[in-house]
Length: 85
Image 1 (cartoon, one colour):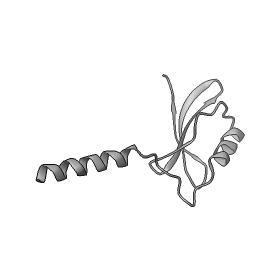
Image 2 (cartoon, helix red, strand yellow):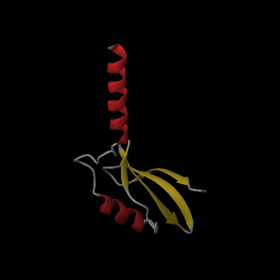
Image 3 (tube, rainbow, N blue to C red):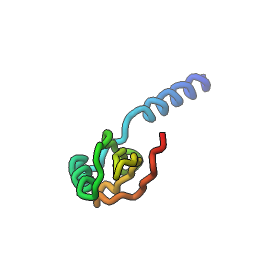
C-alpha cells in the first residue's frame, strides 16, 4: 500500500511541474514589458512568459539575441545573457 501512495504523490508532483507559472496580480502586463524594452532598443521579441517570479523572454539588441529576465513590477532587466544557440 505504501508504494501506491508514493506513486500517486510522484504523479501529482510531476503534474504540478507541467503547469506554467502565472503572473502575479501586481505584475505589469507583458505588453508593457515589451514597450519598456522597445524604448531601450530591443526588437524581435520572443514569447513573454512568467517564470520563477519574473518575466522571461528573448529579444534582439543591435543584431544580437539575448535571453532576458525582467522584474515583474518595475519592468527593469534583472538578467541578460547572450543567446549563442
